[in-house]
Structure formats: structure tokens, C-alpha cells
Image 1 (cartoon, rainbow, N blue to C red):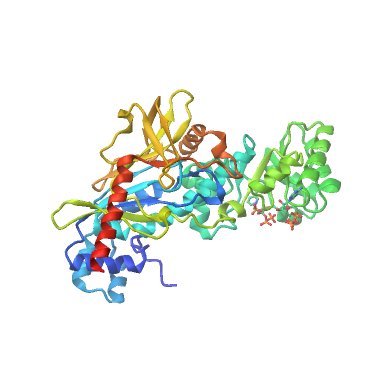
Image 2: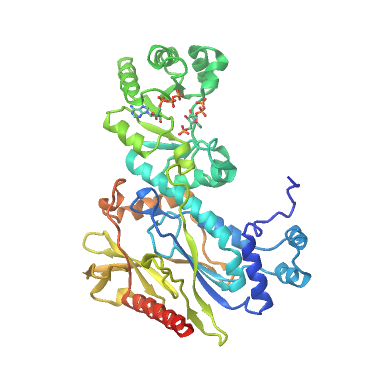
Length: 486
Ligand SMILES: Nc1ncnc2c1ncn2[C@@H]1O[C@H](COP(=O)(O)OP(=O)(O)OP(=O)(O)O)[C@@H](O)[C@H]1O
Ligand SMILES: O=P(O)(O)OC[C@H]1O[C@H](OP(=O)(O)OP(=O)(O)O)[C@H](O)[C@@H]1O
Ligand SMILES: O=C(O)c1cccnc1
């Protein structure tokens, strides 16, 4: 590895093709044309009924610091880009505008979650970093929320630092887990950076270091008032739990016997037996914490077996999004300024109807039924529409248009906030714990049918009539143009 440069920046955290495209835009003098891009994903991850958006705070930092540094430019020079182009890049800053849903927001497939309006070159260069950030953080926040739906009020701690795809993923994944509802992380640096709660017990190595559990637990208790003892190093029921009880009894009044942790074996059986032993010894408030390759499926199964677990430590399967390692959010151009200075809507056609992008500058509203306080669906409009003005809102499926309903007594809540206004940041991120609270409240708007982990109902994400007509018209225009060529 070369040295880490003093002026290292994230601006080269992009794909080479972005720079190559920008070189052409610049050479052809179209680099400053206004372009509009949207970020959305096509399929919800994990078979879940919703996703929890995360990543905005890091995106704001990235765009705030967007500039090619001396060593960035020197490297591009090495790659063969010419001086004039490098000179142009050297003065580039992010001067565009950004609209986004906020972190912790409940989001769905096929709705714009972020919109960038910026000079074409800038909008192009930032794609990779934006998707990289959102794809990972939203995925982990969603997985965490999914696990939290199963553990409910029981505490969930994020234990994944050692298994994450490297350090960045551990740090930002810990933050995303907390946004998704986890009470704490074991990752101390994440605690420091994001001001989120940290928690921890001790490892098997600790017991091995003192050779026996009794001495290990005593040693731990000498330095810590709140004690959770790991009881499965040798034999959970014959040695671990009895030793924990013995130490707790000897130190009664001096320590808080907060819990024991089970990390192997049959967690259902062991937790029931351990619960009985703790209760018989009078430690009815001592909690049982479980860990070992857990995820929402195993936890649900353990609960069905009557496991007596009070809180859960979850690492690998959360932090690596084990069962679906990528979200697949994309960044698509929806409008571009033409040579006359007018904005033109654009789209990308494919043979798959669901994959055709929706052109134009759009707004997204959550339609909330005022009678029951529940969301009827999300409603995507053109920028100049306001669904709140309608008395009777027609919501129809964007592909199977015969599926439709009318909504009357509703509130149309706009989901996008302006984050950046022509380069100036106009939004202040709340704390991570506030994001967690926001996610909880956003989820309360959803009927339980959308939140169940298995085969959830499909939440409606609909287009307004104008939006739909505009899309059909653009598709027709492109078809006509192609036919004219032939
Ligand atoms: N009662 C149970 N029902 C279903 N799955 C369980 C139950 N108890 C534990 N598990 C899960 O089964 C998996 C295997 O656990 P087990 O302790 O047998 O293997 P292990 O991980 O190889 O153990 P060790 O950590 O000692 O090497 C883990 O993911 C664990 O969470
Ligand atoms: O199982 P996960 O969901 O990934 O959670 C993290 C795991 O990390 C630790 O195990 P490890 O074997 O690494 O260390 P230990 O010796 O402390 O048990 C801990 O005991 C958990 O089992
Ligand atoms: O604190 C713990 O018990 C812990 C932390 C990280 C990984 N496994 C366990």
C-alpha cells in the first residue's frame, strides 16, 4: 500500500467511468447543464415489507467536502488526464441541490428516496459514493428493524464489529443498527463518534485466562459493579450457572448481578434451565442474554420453543446482511437541460415494464388516513402537483392500473426535505437516537400486515395520473423516434 495521503479525500471514491464521462461533458461544454437524478431501489430486501432509510448524514459530509485534492489530481495526471481537464476538476465543488427522505424514514421500492439537481458533471461524479453509502446503511438499518420487530421490547445489542466487511462497515453498520431500533452496540468507536449507547459482557478468553469460572467471575466483579457472566465456557448448567450464582451470592450487596450470557448449545433448553436455577437462587431479576449466530428466524424459533431469553446479542447475520448482501438502489437521470436551456424529462426503457424509470422532477407523499392514523400508501406526483388539494384522491397501481382505490379524509405528508440548496447545507441532522425514535413513529403509521416478517402485504406506491400520463407519453416519444430511424 502507498502511504495514506495527508490530503486524502473521498472524491476519488467513484468509478473511473464517471470521470471519463465527465471529461466528455466538459470537452463538449455540456458539463454545467442542469441534470436531475433520483435514487430508488426496485425490490425490498429480506422479503421485508418496508425498508428503513439511513446514510444521509454521511452523504452530507461527503458533499460538503467534495473537492479534488492535490494528490487526487496528481493521481489522475498519472492516469493520463490532460492539464486543462485537471485544472477544471481542481475548482469543482458540489454546487447543486439535494432533496431526501430523512434517516429513520420508512421507505419502499420504486419511490425516489433522494433527488439531486446539479450541474451534470457534479451529479455524475457523486453517484458511486451516494449509492455506496445508501445501499449499505439502508440495508443494515432495515435488517436491524426486521430483527427488532421479532424481539419487540427485549433489548438487542449489535455485536458485529469482528465480522463486518471491514472497519467502515462495522462503524456505519453499528450506527444503522441503532437507527433500525437496536438499543446498543459493542463497537466503542461507533459509540464515541455517534454518541450511541455501548454495552458489553466478557469473552470465553477471559474465563480461560483465569482458568476457572469462579476466579474469572470474581475478578470481573472486583472491577465492575454491573456484572454479566458468560456461562458456557465449560458446561453451562453444571458449572457456568452455578459459579455465577455462587459469586453473586458471595458478593450480594456489592455487585448487581445483571445477567448471564449463553453463547452455545441449545439456547431454548439452556435458557429455561438457567432461568429455573436463577429463580430458585433468588435472582429473579437477573437477565438471560443470548448470542451465537442469531437472526430474526432463529430468534422467532427460540421464542416458539419458549426460550427464556431477555436480551439478544447479534453480530454476523446483521452486520453482513447475511441473507441479502446488497440492496440494489440505483441512481437514474430523470431530467436534463437541453441546448435551449429548458428542462427535458428523460427515461430509461427496458423490456421489463416494472424497470422503466419514471421521468421528470417528482414529489413523494405519504397519504395518511385521518380517521385511523394509518398510511394508505405513498403517492408520487409531478413537482407542480399537490395531492392535498384533492377531495377524492385516486390511487392506482403503477403497473396493474386496474387495481385502484379512492381516499377522501387524508393528510398528504411530503417525504422529501431539502438538504442542500445550491451548495449550501440547509438541514441539520438530528441525533442517531432521534432517528431511531423517528423510525419507531414512522412504523406506527403502517398496518401490521406490512410489518410481518414473512410474506408481508405489498404497500402501495402509486403514481399520480399526471405522472403516469407523462411516463406513457415519454415512452411513446422514444418509440416513435426509434421507428423513424428504422
Ligand atoms: N433451540 C434452538 N433452536 C434452534 N436453533 C438454535 C437453538 N439453540 C441454538 N440454536 C442456534 O443453532 C446454531 C448452532 O448452535 P450450536 O451451539 O449448536 O453450534 P455452534 O455455533 O457450532 O456452537 P459453538 O459456538 O459451541 O461452536 C446457532 O446459530 C444457534 O443460535
Ligand atoms: O455470533 P454473532 O451473531 O456473530 O455474534 C458475535 C459473536 O462473537 C463472539 O464470538 P467469538 O467466538 O468471536 O468470541 P468469543 O470467544 O468471545 O465467544 C460472541 O460470543 C458472539 O457469538
Ligand atoms: O459484549 C459481548 O458480549 C460481545 C461483544 C462482541 C462480540 N461478542 C460478544
